[in-house]
Length: 205
Image 1 (cartoon, helix red, strand yellow):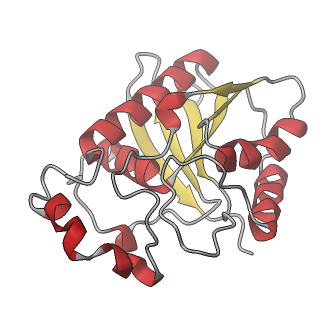
Image 2 (cartoon, one colour):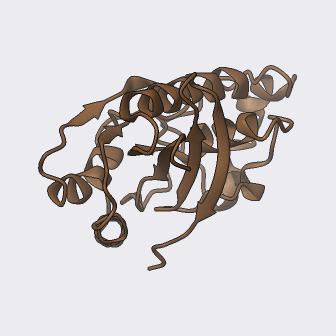
C-alpha cells in the first residue's frame, strides 16, 4: 500500500428528523444526539490514523460529523467540497414516511417512468462521477502512503463504490451497504485511478 493513497469516505451520523422528511439538499437538518455520538465514534476510530487531508460535503450533517475528527487532527483544515454533497432530488421536502412509502403517490409517478434516467433528480452516473473525482483529487493530494477522510452521503458514496467496482449503477436504496457513520475506503494511484478496498462499520450505536 506504500505506493497507494487511502481515502476513507464516511457517511454522516444520524439526523434529527422526527417528521421523516426527505431532506436531500435542504438546509437546517442537523445531527441528533445519537448522530453526534456516531460522529464522536468516528473521531475515536480515526484518532491514531496519520491523516493528511480532511474534506466534507457542505451539508450541516456532514460538517457536524467531521467536526470531532478535525478536533483530534488540529493541524488539518477541513476543506468543503461541493462534489461530496447529497444527491439532488425533486422530491425533497416531502414527508417520506416509513420505507419512503409516502413518496409513492400519483403526484410523483411522473418521476419514475424511466429508471435508467431518474426523473426525481440526479442520476447515479453523474453522482458517482463527481464523488469519484473528489476521491481521486484527495488521493493525489495526500500522495502515495497518505490518507484522507471525506464525509458524504449514502447515495453518492454507494454510486462511487459501484463505479470503482465496475458494477451496474442502478440499485435499490434498501440493498446498499452504507450505514450511518460507516467507512468505505478507496485506493488511489499516483495517476488518480480509484479502486474499492473495504467497507467497515466501526460505530454501532
